[in-house]
Length: 195
Image 1 (cartoon, rainbow, N blue to C red):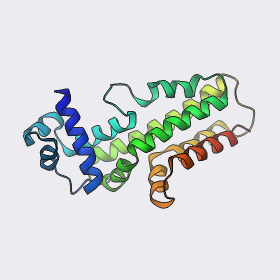
Image 2 (tube, helix red, strand yellow):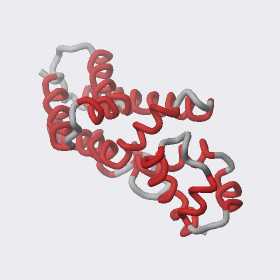
Image 3 (cartoon, one colour):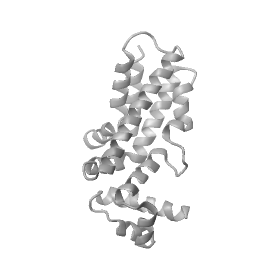
Image 4 (cartoon, rainbow, N blue to C red):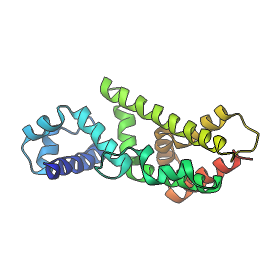
């Protein structure tokens, strides 16, 4: 069962990136995965549900039922001894997500307005990113790691804009995406917010 689901998610990921959301059918995904078309419908119900599952798995990098916020490197971003270590951890988390899910974010940007389920999933993702950014700065403030300066909401806003999927799509499309350059941008910008 788990193997079949993994095959379907892998096939869906490949086809969504190659063909886009609209052009990819559940029948094509089933054929690519080597399973009966009915299997896709039974497991996921709709193309939107499968697409959301593909993105969810790409965000974390595996099929384990642990969200991004509860992964070890995300915990480091909230609890490391120094603010510099926390910023490095948050940059690692963000770049990892961008590397794994960036191409899918581009597909999602094209598909978002097509189905209410995709629109809600995109908005939920944006809210989760905002909450992660707010939590990052709240933890740093509570642990006495921040100098007085920029208002906490401004820090959250700048960080949110920097880390959100929409920015990843823009960087990939417009600036010739480089994971190393994006990581440096995150580290340098967040470090500047602490001064």
